[in-house]
Length: 198
Image 1: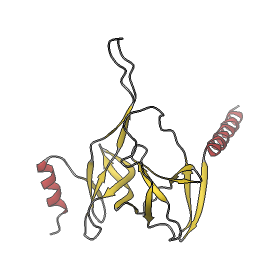
Image 2: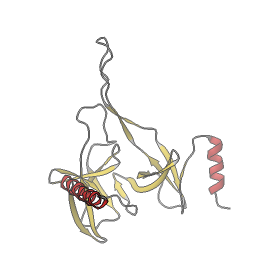
Image 3: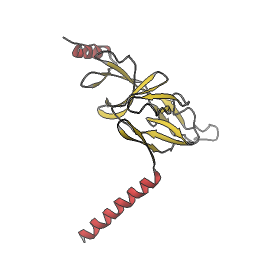
Image 4: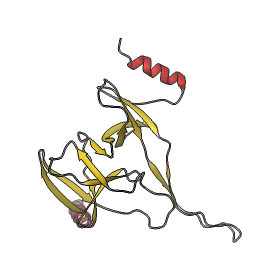
């Protein structure tokens, strides 16, 4: 009996993988570091206020992990935390790589692990300062989504679904750590004293 259950579980697992693969469109390109994959997916709500993008336009981008021959036009989806591009009318997302800097319209992005509300998250951060010193300053610029609400009475209006910018969080990257910048002045002074060279 346990063997049958195990076999059934394995079958279900592979069926799930096949279904997931059928829903995913992968495109690969040759580059200096081997194959780089792009994964297609789109599930943004259809009716809403605001935008999941800081800038809706696709713009020429340079990417440190790509061959020089490949220069796609990209936009940053701040709601999904994805770098998007279009190929033959279809929407794709760049594979997230922690060693790839993406420059869009003079804005520098990298994919990092960073502390957030007591947990470690992974996502794109925008580098604010020139990459020349010991420390780099990064910003987490995220857009959140709030579902719409029907009016409680006929005298009130429905509240539409909307995208809205979350509070920007800042980080300092040292040679070994990504550190959240505290909002309180005393905590900030203590942090700067801790990371300042002797």
